[in-house]
Image 1 (cartoon, helix red, strand yellow):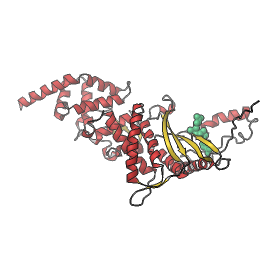
Image 2 (tube, protein in one colour):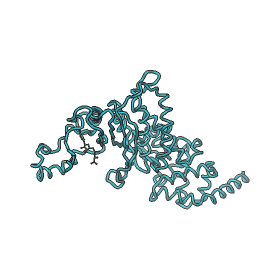
Image 3 (cartoon, rainbow, N blue to C red):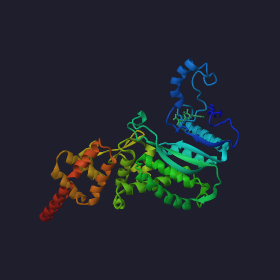
Image 4 (cartoon, rainbow, N blue to C red):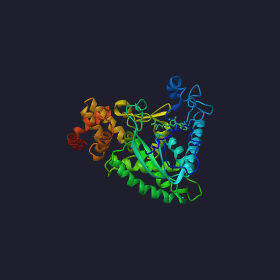
Length: 414
Ligand SMILES: C[S@@+](CC[C@H](N)C(=O)[O-])C[C@H]1O[C@@H](n2cnc3c(N)ncnc32)[C@H](O)[C@@H]1O
């Protein structure tokens, strides 16, 4: 009879694998995602019961009163040194785990690393640790893995997908010059983004899928440098990826053509709705998105539709603003005018609405209605802002005729 090769399961820290060099054909790992989940603390709940019921069958697994915590690779903030220390620990341990994968993998073996995080910080750590380990990313795939209804997805801009990064142990090119690597990334990324867009990946998931594709190019080099001799690390790479993905997304959301006619603030608003919907977002993430589109968040917040609340940024919709506040603005962006008009529309003040549209000059410009349409398309069906927009847009053709008549009449009067 043929002997069955049963799988064997061992427990060890990923940072110290009890195996010789060049041992495995494949390594598949799903490491913790930075600060996302406090696994060991959550596990304690089950551990104490399992220890009582089956602890005697696996004494080596249940030797401690609670789950062991000291080698856990999670960026915690509760120990000495706060989040900064937790972050450093995570980076160091993840780096060690990737080096172990490199060590135990056969020269022609394959490694797959699953990762996701909505913050740039979470990605910087992963990229730096991965590249330092010597593993070369050769492909990346976003896969829908998260339940939208889970607790952490509610009221936050949670991600729906994880990125599967496929790596090999292979020779890398020596030095890449950042200006040339950037051109290579831009070309490759635009092709990949076309595919991802057609597959319906959107919002924050689109960004992280873009990151995966960029490291396929970046990781081919031993190191990437600029002409001043500085080594380019993940932070600069991510800044660039954000620029390329942002530019691509704005053009797509607007169905091409008019992106260049819009102010940075209008582009920011559109991109925000598409990326984060109506969620509040940590300041640093919001700042990075704003920066990639040429908006200085510190200068803009608390003036119009951008609100800072403690460490979070929220982008207000029309229903969260007051007419008087918009009226009092010295300079009104297209978005302010749109909100103003939507509030008037909601109150049935048609004549005032026509006046605002006419005086601001937006009322008979196609771009104004295309922006309104694009915002509506980014929002979920149950959004109040969407209902405002769709209602307003349904009477658009008649409104433009009325505005033209209104302007003619005004012209005759003066
Ligand atoms: C993203 S989860 C993996 C989830 C898994 N794929 C599943 O579907 O259940 C990350 C896991 O890494 C584990 N982990 C944390 N530190 C570790 C270490 N030093 N060595 C091995 N595993 C570790 C955590 O306990 C957690 O179970």
